[in-house]
Length: 232
Image (cartoon, rainbow, N blue to C red; front, top):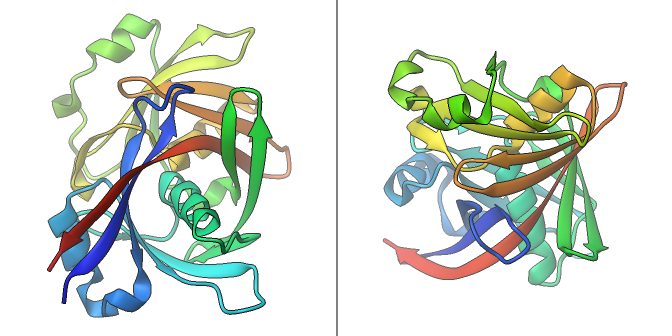
């Protein structure tokens, strides 16, 4: 039976450009044992399998897979799935993933509609963070130089006073040579710097974060629907 996969781009700019592709699948379409195979076949940095909310509830259960492994938590899939649930008429207040219960908000701003998730910093992987001296160093970084079994995050200030940074993320061991926009890394760098941030990652994706000293970070982004893809 064909599986319908909604393809989203998460963390676009205000014109709907850039963003990280995401596969969203109704979990009832796929046997749990087949989720990794489907995610590998799709080839997106992450695919999320969402159990639709039961009638009268405002929470959903989800599982996240890279092409190589299941993740307990990730940012761009939880933002994207929360947006997808709202579009289908079942908005949620929380999204339950193996890492914890992600809180969800939907916000209208002058520069777009934002989906916001709230997560604990310790849910994110323990990224190796590289504080580089310039944006040019970030842009010149070679993913091949960051190929061991950890996630790598390189960044530099665009404007320290404004809290804006330029970044890239590499995770070859997860089947992700370079990720276009990484919500979990945004959580980590926000906690690392202990301040709100405006992050430009990859080719131009946009992530906003909001820091809380108690270990919570909000991650906000815009989402665009690129249609439905079917796989066997």
